[in-house]
Image (cartoon, rainbow, N blue to C red):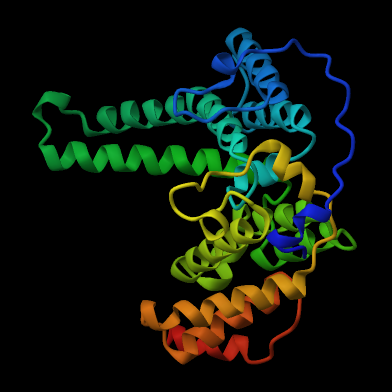
Length: 307
């Protein structure tokens, strides 16, 4: 893994010839202040136009999700796993993910939630105006849960993990990225482990959140020359597309990355009140999921934590 200080040695490949029209800075600046690249803006604009004309009548949620996913994945060079994983990458990826999920929400989540609400009211039999606040809140929560599950199940089918156990998913993901060792490959691997539910299943919600948070910090410190760790709080900003693609296809040193995460883990453990067993467990997760090293003591630590 190259550190931030060594990034001057990166030699980015020549950008492909542009065929899309040039857009002004104002056109490329999103409402939240993020400025996307010209190429990204052109693709998002075209995808929005396609969505405005899309007719999913008669299609199942699984079919709709696959249609939207495949369209975005093709537009963004097969990187939707990394884009939706939200672990690292350029700031414009957040805009891609937002527009993608806006379409998923409009065409899958909202119809599913509305159908669940209608079903709940009809099953109860009383006029909705007679429901108590608590009953309405419970129904709203149930509708969100049902819609979330429909979207999640559709994503699992699109990614090819429907009907697989978590162990089978992890094995399939490792096989998928075996022999691939660029920064982007590693980011795709970690994103897929997260999106497939493997990390939460193996670690539990709290430890998976810690793992991903520390990974985001390490990515930012190592690869973003504008990170708070490199330029300070007042000058920091998210990575641009040009900066990201200078490092995306460089060889990735998993051992060095895991070692840096362990160093940071020890630095912050006292502040967070983490016990020695917790730190050791997280180190085991770093070894298992980053370097692929086996840790015979990890399962016993997990069993002890569960007890």
